[in-house]
Length: 333
Image (cartoon, rainbow, N blue to C red; front, side, top):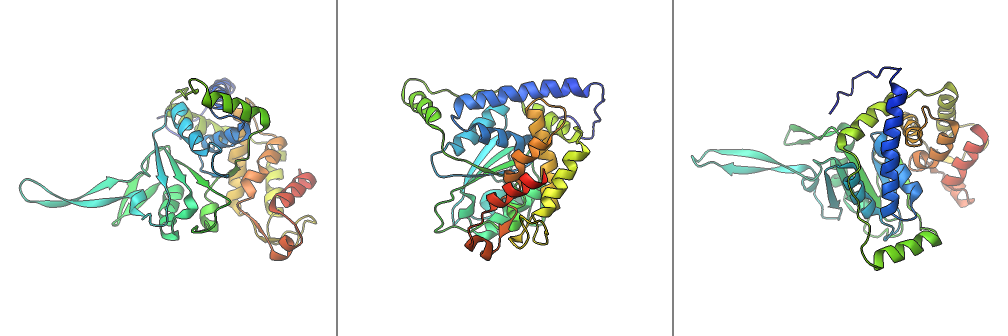
């Protein structure tokens, strides 16, 4: 993979952006042929990967969340693993463990066996069913790109992304994700029901004849190069100011008329960083050379809704996180 410190010549940048945009437009189009009626989900998931982050997919069962992750791995040529989170899952079931081995001469030594976290695309299914101790093992991997077992450090692949799923309905036997871990997810991607036409197409495609299968479109090197390109894209002063105003207005000390006194806790600086990267990635996905205010509006919900919570009084009065974010966007951007 190319060195992430490589500089991009400003004269060749537009051509590279155009070529990369074409590649990922093909990726998006191919995924849409396999995953019906989830165009926004596909877009936000690709934005997450292009920005180099992790995504939290929230939706009821049967909306193709697992199929989306599996198809992404195939289309992007990534190594994938899947972990089904359960209450009895142990940290070593994620990170791996050391085992004692004895050689033919009788010498004994420990050998580390990689866990499923050592992959390029990890699906953490029903992540909120594992205990906080197990969740913390994944937290270190997500933030620091390495794991520590028995005092030894083991680095994860350069490309390492977690796409976690969560069922919003079943709350028995679950452990709510702590705010520190929620903040590690670049975007919260809400997976809704498909529209009538999409569900009709899905019904016919999956019950009559051969179902469409995902095929490889690009390589991990292409994704790595695209992530490097995203970080080199220019961001206008107006877009940057919109990000700062929006994030700062969504905090408890906000004096904005649409948020003052409503917010119990709000987004930190990592939200601003997520906005900057996600807006650039969305612009690249659309074939644009720089992000615009429209990107900020489109990404405000996915970036902010898992990084803030309303006060009890605000919720009792019928206020919602989505409603507060929408009002802030309307008045600030």
